[in-house]
Image 1 (cartoon, rainbow, N blue to C red):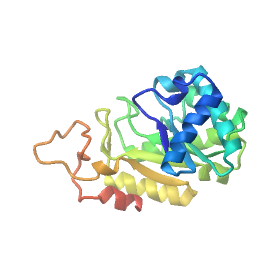
Image 2: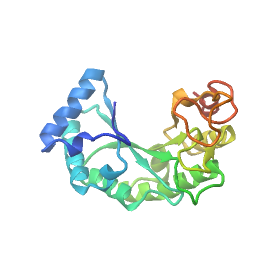
Image 3: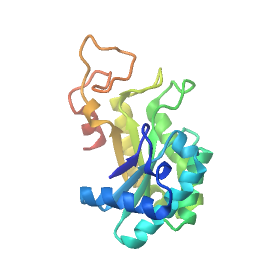
Length: 224
């Protein structure tokens, strides 16, 4: 079950205390019959120190109640690594005793100054974040790689000039296999098709990739 995302109000900003927040997360997990919780924290939610601390406290409480609960965080990243807010969130989780199985890096939408090879940017992001994860969690080199995941936005990204190609996907997959990264993924499976001929060639569309491809080609490149 994934909580949060780019829009809407994340539960940590709506619940008044850790017990209520843990109960809300638990209700969603039970409804889905899931023992896996991912927390996609970005935008204003990532800079809200109060909700970050409350979320950490609630997740720790939830893991006390559910020994088998697998927790991951999905965070924005740059080719230079996680920013100070992302690192603060992970430090908060670690300080509260949260068992974090993976940090899923959103290797996408870096900004207008990043208009070169998106595969290279994804690898640079992973390498920079790897050092940061080792420091935050005090893990070994190998464990830091195993505790990392990479999610790329396939095809045309939201930022002008950023296009993640099939060759980039193959490059990321090979790198992940070499390093033992937990998983690679894409945003999103329903975009893994070629756009119609009359579709925009420069805008990121919600229903197609914006690049020439066979249906499902990115999934194949990622090894799905």
